[in-house]
Amino acid sequence: MKLNTDQKSEVFSLVKQTILDGLKGVTPPEVMSDDEALNQLGACFVTLTINKQLRGCIGSLQAHLPLMQDIANNAYKAAFQDPRFPPLTESEVEEIDIEVSILTAPEIIAGCSSKEALLAQLTPFEDGLVISDERHRATYLPSVWKQLPDKNAFVDNLMLKAGMTQWSENMRCERYHVQAYEAFWGDID
Image (cartoon, rainbow, N blue to C red; front, side, top):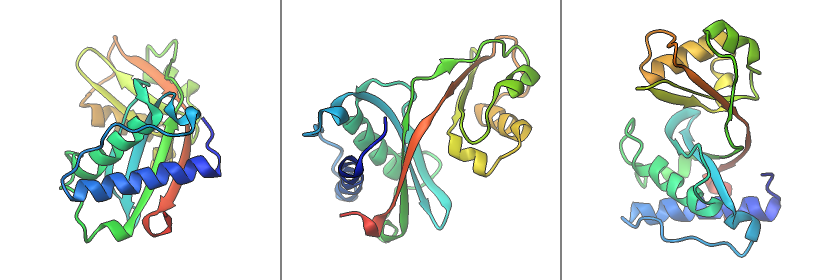
């Protein structure tokens, strides 16, 4: 879903208000927009960075809530419940860069019986990737290609993230695309 200027403004205002409320211990309420497009089922990731360093990233791979609700929930979780980081503090908020990535529905990549077969089908900087087997699952957003532009490194690191030591004969691979929008905290109304 492509957002227009008004929709982007509404999305980032929601993220900012959700984080400000979270600093006061308030969890996201039920959210509805006057814009019907933003109330459609949607999946997103919210990524928070400070000085280009990851500070929180949580998201949904499948559309199961209205997009605005998913954005509010994931903004809250990225700021306060990402297990890799302590909860965001009031002193940090002025330094936050926010990225909201709206995902397409994941599509199965047929013929990924080997890592080499998967590599041949990946498009760097465009594809987000989900890999899973019976016990493991992990994803990388397309933005991760900036840090890992080599296909081999991208997949190897994703396997490590998932806790996989080798390619599984039951590997399932899915790709998705995103519309990503960024804003600096201080620029949000």
